[in-house]
Image (cartoon, rainbow, N blue to C red; front, side, top):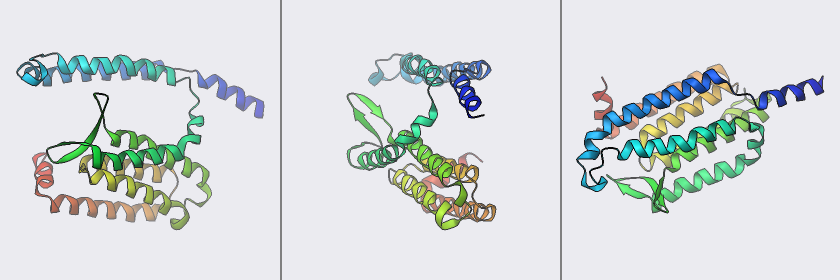
Length: 226
C-alpha cells in the first residue's frame, strides 16, 4: 500500500495541468493588454521614462518571460521540501519588513520598497510567501490541536499580527488587509473552531473599520469605490 502511495506521488510530481496553464497564460496576456492600455499615454509623456510609451509593457513582458518558465519548472518540484525552510522564511520575512522601515525608499510618505542593485523589491510580497509557508506547516503539524484557541489559533494569530502590523507601519493598509484575509483563510482551512472563526471575523471587521476611520485618506479611498 505504501509503495502505491509513493508511486502515485512520483507520477503526480511531474504532471502539468495544461488547462490551468492555458488559463494562466490567457490571464497574463489580458494583464499585459491592460497594462499597455493604462500606461502608454502616461509613459509617452513622462520625461523620467524617456518618453517611452512602451516602458511599462516591456518591463512587465520581461517579468512574464522570466516568471512563466519558472512556474512550469517549479511544477516538477516537490512542494513538501519547502517545509524545511519555514523558520528561515518567516525570519527573513520579518527582517525584510523591519529593514524597509529603515532603509526603504520613501514615496508619498510610505516606505514599501527596498532598492538593491538598481532593482526594487517589495518585502511585503516576500512576506506573503513566508507567512503562508509557516502557517501551512504549523497547521499540518498541529492539526490535532487546531480546535484549541491557545495551542492552535493563537500561535498563528501572533504570526499574522506581527506580519500585518509591520506592513501597516509602512504604511500599507491594503496589503495588510490582503495578508490578513490570507491568514484567516489558512486558519479556516487548518481546522480552527467555527465559533472562534466567527468571533475573529467580527474582530477583524471592527479593526478594519477603526483603521479606516482614524485616517481620513483611507476612508476617502473606500468611499470612492461606493
